[in-house]
Length: 259
Image (cartoon, rainbow, N blue to C red; front, side, top):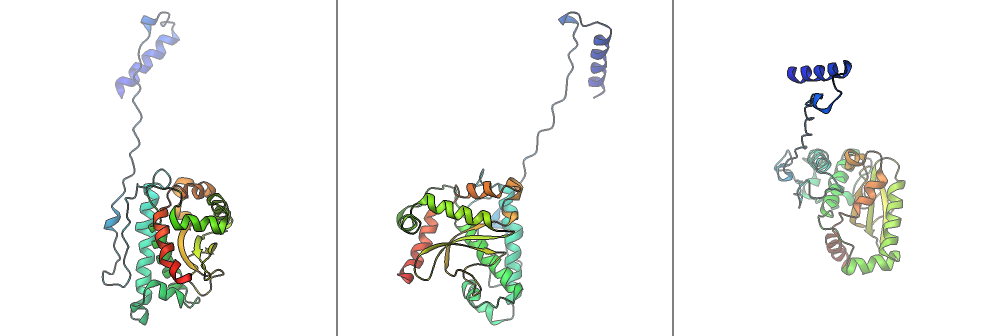
């Protein structure tokens, strides 16, 4: 560093006293390169486990790495979302049902009979179910819907573009934190609906009840590292990482019960 400073002083001195009349008089100044940014390190989603290994609810493994959805959802956001927020809902849900009859029920049974005044169970049970679905319907090789779900979307919305238009409008209009859902309602129709906080369409207090087959998390922790306040950009990016094959599977699981 001292040599670099001396070289710089010499260069300035030559300029000051007219010593740089010819190119050969110029003194080369070596400027150190800025340090390269260190890439953020992320862990392995398979390392994330519930605190209680014997609890009725455990972490469902991600079917992809944290960086698999880039550039649409960045690896650090995925890691924090899954290994901090989601596991916290899982742990608190286990604590909420411990020692009760709910230990022997699955999450859908719990949510269907939920007492909405039980905020501990409502928030953490909802958070656990909602995130499981959200992470499950994301995928690396996004395509437009095909097969039965494509036909159903065209039937109920007119076209895939119309579906996207209405889904995005709903997502952008949520005030604060919440979720956007594509559900199969009690009549077998596809419906787009929203809920606040960690509520979902399975709960008795839901404005629009039905079976979810696709979900978008619009809590800020789902997108803020990459998109900051630009929720609209995050919503648009979501269409690039939907695993429509999985959505179609979920639709077909429900369809026989509603037809």
